Length: 543
Image: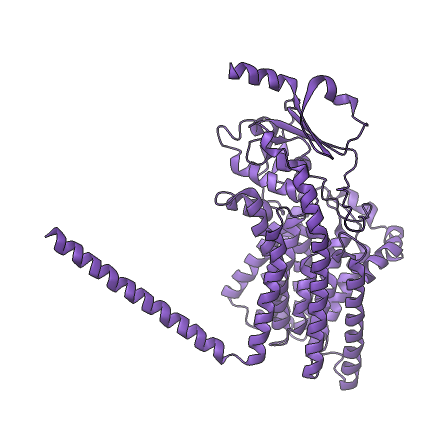
């Protein structure tokens, strides 16, 4: 009887498997048929986009470390969130840190990596987040341009050039993900503003909320853009404008609540006429804008690409103006993005570099300006000119990526040297990093300009506290209320390990490295010291 049941079960399983395989075969055949039905030009375009996406994500996975300034601190604090309440792994952390679980903007990257860390190691979680940021930028630009002009998203290829930018290498991961979310939200509004039902309003509000939890500046710029588009696209229909603005009232209240709950008393000093005029006449801001320095992070050689891109955009801008004037389409709807471009450029000059504990405001705004101009630019060219533009934009993106990889390779080797002693750190210990020179010392490529660009070694000590319950004593995030992990008012003053990088002979006497610490690991640039009490406690435990 058991044999019969077993045979029946086997036959049933096989028949089920055959049915499943048949379903898969039908689905694949359907996909193949649909793919063949797509026009060859569109099919080739999608293949090119896919290849470019793969090429741009590849460096993140080839190299062990991504050389960003604040990135290691973000990975570490996401790890703190994950293990904070763990009885063993979070025991020392609870003596140093307290969680800030308020709904502030800046949550996304920490929460996203924290959840990923339940499945993958911390470094892999960072790579997944970075891959998402890199992939979404060009895709969001294609979506935004297609929403503005159905089927006309030629300039979306510039999204690949913009996907690797200065703010990303500064380690501003939440802001970096907020930019593509901004363009997805703006594109969604442009696409559906004529048919704003409850379903569309709900999706738009969710996209706006996601932008809020990524970064407050992107959220503010998004609300401003939505208001401007509502007015410029429906100014001849006052009721529609009022309805659209009413939809956005909760979003405006959210923005106002955050601004009011954070001290703005100092903001008056930033917006006096003399201060604004000083910024409008600032040669630094003009140079930054006209060179798109938000795409420059390792070397001045990035400027060759960005300036060539601006020459291309300038020529397209002149051609567009000439065509619109000739066709008498000055007041057309397609010109609304020129207005937004002009207003964002004005805001770029009016805003200070930092306020309310936030910095790099002009750099961040700069990243939005030229992508917002793209829907205004003419695309009605001969097919050979279009192909030429695609070749030029792809060349810009690949040259920019190649230049980045030229630095990634030596930086990865040097970062491996810095992290060569991470496995020597015992569990639940406090680690301090000391630097005499934060320069990574890359010799194979032209030197960095550290006064302006990225310093990848600023927060790198955080790697010594991943996976071992350690406390990073140079954890800068813990000082600010817009991050989820803050310092406790009272915390221990013990320093179990000190990591030094290129310290030379200028050893700080404050820490008594020679008398209180043992040197347990050294390389050409790195030294790891362990407090002598640690050695004595280890000896007692061994006995």
